[in-house]
Length: 478
Image (cartoon, rainbow, N blue to C red; front, side, top):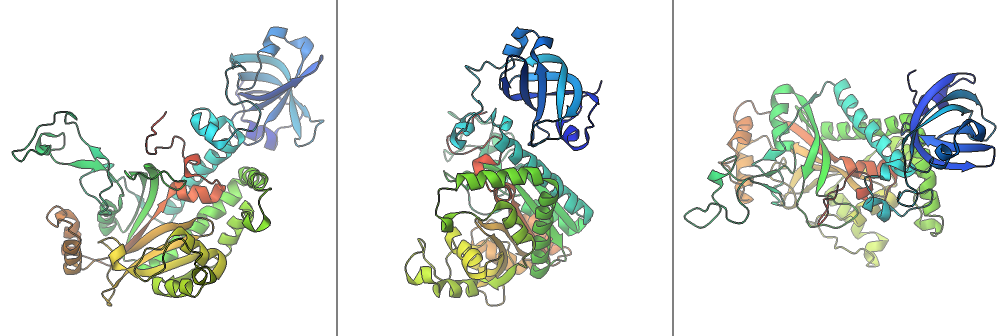
């Protein structure tokens, strides 16, 4: 007999059907005559109740059905007498696949802190919260591929090991096979990378953008979706050393086209989540309400589902960086010195500034454009004022920047000049500059941090809780 998924059974199961399921025990409660076992197989937030008459099964077997144990159950579906479910399973046969000692199994049916669950990340998928988060994460990954495929984009696999630093930030993880204690040295006493595996210094990628541009300038429209790495010593709720990025690059797109695509893309993903992840979203919305019930009303988050619908149904406001600075300088928080970070033309806006624009001033998502060139990367298209570049950041409620992108500089002379200003060696980037030498075109792209987006969709408060095994400073467990 084929096993069925609990998700399918709860949707379409008919009383009287004889079925077989496998899963893990969430809870077991019993009396002298009957045991009620809540079984979950990961396919849904909901459990299937298994009813086991005590007289049909050995006492030792029933005693070993504890939280965390794995079972296969065969039996007949019947109409449920309890609330919250249409059917339950009257067990005819129970096979104990794997025991879970209640004295040692850490994920017991009680409230656990998120920090405790991070320490037990190998088992936290079995909780309702993390089951919901990772089903949503899967759905969003699938939706990303579906969106770009349906629009005619090509999925390009850019390298994880690279010799280039796309951001010019230098915060990279070095990749080497040289002896860490006694590497071969040059005459100057520096590590001799000509003896290394790749014959030169290499590192883990911080972005697939530069290689993505090469693909776009032949295939038209491409996207990357892969892991990226930043060696930032940042122990915050918003930073990871290893995270996933979605980076589309499009030939013949200017800044407006880029903004249009970003808005459409985000709305598509949110619409997909609302349509396909409603049970998990409703659970997480309820969890968030419970978590914040003791906070003052004005400090509570917007209802999770309402927040997603709000973004979906809003037109994103588009303003320049200069206009944003003026708005911030005329704001009450600025006049009352409530902002922690300075507000001056030329500084990079912080999350508090971005959230003020979105949540207080405009009360909808915002796209900021035309940032000062001195705080942006070398590859961004320079405006005629020689002060700003055609950059764009998409700002969301509760999270601030969620997408960063720009029109790319297609003019060879301007690009080379900017690279020299920023001490980026043009001779090492000959391959990138070739795309401006041969058939250059207007082109644009952006990057969406996948975990940052999943934070927004799930309402979780810490980025370490939306990736299976977070990599952070001093932490590479599991």
